[in-house]
Amino acid sequence: MIEKFFSERNTAIVYILLFIIEIVIIRNFYFSLPDKIATHFGNMNNPDGFSDKFNFILIYNVFLFFLILMFYGINIFIKKSSNSMINVPKKEYWLAPERRDITISMLQANLNFFGIITFVFMLVNLIFIIDANLSSPIKLNNDFWIALMLFLVSTMAWLIRLLMVFSKVEEDEEESE
Image (cartoon, rainbow, N blue to C red; front, side, top):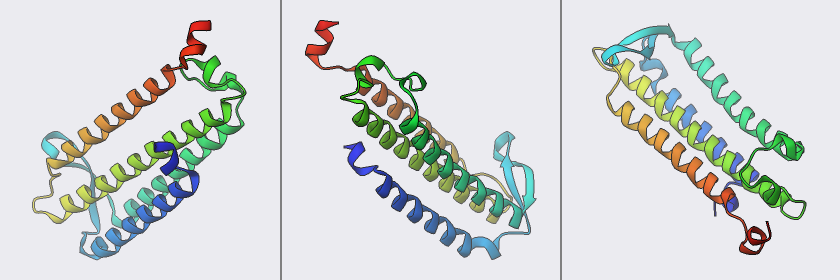
């Protein structure tokens, strides 16, 4: 199922929609934010790092753009790589010539999914940073930790699912080994 939805085309559409959401969020709050904003929060969610508002937004957008390029780059690298460069369980089975294309498609779709959940987490993080800077005193909302835990749990679930999928082989193939 994940492979059908997270095709290269669908993923590009989702990234574009997420970028539009990010631009709308920034547009709606940019002029409400102070010129110097808290960008890092330490002990007890109190700010301990600050940045010029414009530079923060610029760097954040560059980072999000780099994130997308990185995931697309990895997808291209996987497709063009030799089998020795790809590490999956039951490698000989999954990268056999008759299954290699579907395996690469599965890996690419899963990376697209992980790229999107990472982008969504960064978008949620931006909202928490904006919210913190609009509150008095400036303080990161404790809900950030819930969002972080959701991201980490979803990452773990994704990894476990991926390992389970690639740990399986057809019954006939496994018996002949």
